[in-house]
Structure formats: structure tokens, C-alpha cells
Length: 187
Image (tube, rainbow, N blue to C red; front, top):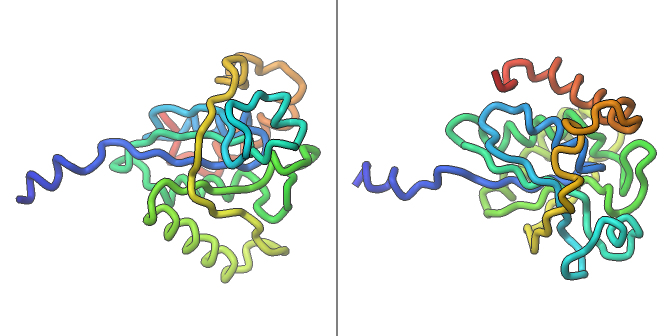
């Protein structure tokens, strides 16, 4: 039975995270060992097939998010969350830097009860450690309908490294990740 149970275990898992502009998260997670793909998109709203313009208007309820497909034999879900909490501010409600609105909220959209437990346990541990001066406001919610963002948003940082937002907002987050998680960089 041991070999049979191994064969039914999933080869890949999915994590869905929102922490401000999806370009920032995608640029970081693209560089993480064990991450097979990262897609920018929208989740958590009330409009079918939202557009970037509708989401940015703040009326759809969606968050800009990334859907990360990863190999749990290489990196755990908890480790992905540890990176998440290091590269964005989980204490600001509906805001990351100058990006304001519910579409920029900090949220973890869990796909399984185990992911929910992991997220809630880590938030409690970070709170108990008093790592932040103010309370963590990261929403933990069940993953709902995912909508992939328009093609021009995919791999935005890689394709537009000289763009102002990429230089002044995305690049500092990538640099912080690369310094703090050097052991997690793809080779």
C-alpha cells in the first residue's frame, strides 16, 4: 500500500496569493525554486470575467493576485507564505505603498483545508512573535473563481524592466527577496 499511496499524492500544488500589485508577486515567485509557473489574475470578486480596468475601478471586489503552481517536494506551502509575508506589508488594509483599493488587499486564497490551517497558524505565529508593529490584516479565504489577467500583465517585470513602476516598486521587492531568501533562488 505504501507505493500505491505515493502514486496518488499530487505532483503539484497551487497557491493563490494577493499582496498588492500582481506584477510584484509574480516577479518574485518566478525566481523561487520549486515554482513551476506563476500567473497574474483576479480572484475574490463578484463579476464574471473581469477586466483590469473594472478591477482597478474597485467595484468588482476582486483582488489582483497570483496563482502559483509549485512542487511541494521542493518548496512547501508554508515556505511560499513566509516569502509572501516578507515581500509585502500585511498590516495595511486595502493598500500596498501608493496602490490603494480593495484590489490591492493582502489575502491568502486557500485551495485546501490544510492550506487554510497553514496560513492561519503562520499568521498566529507572526502575531505572537510581534514581527510587525501593527496587526496583520491579511484575509484568509477559500479560493473561488480564478480569472487570468490579460496577456500583457503576464511576465510584466521581465518584459518591462525599465518601466518606472518596475524600477521603483517591483525591483526593490525582488531585491529584498533575493537577499533574504538566497537559498530559495532558482539556479
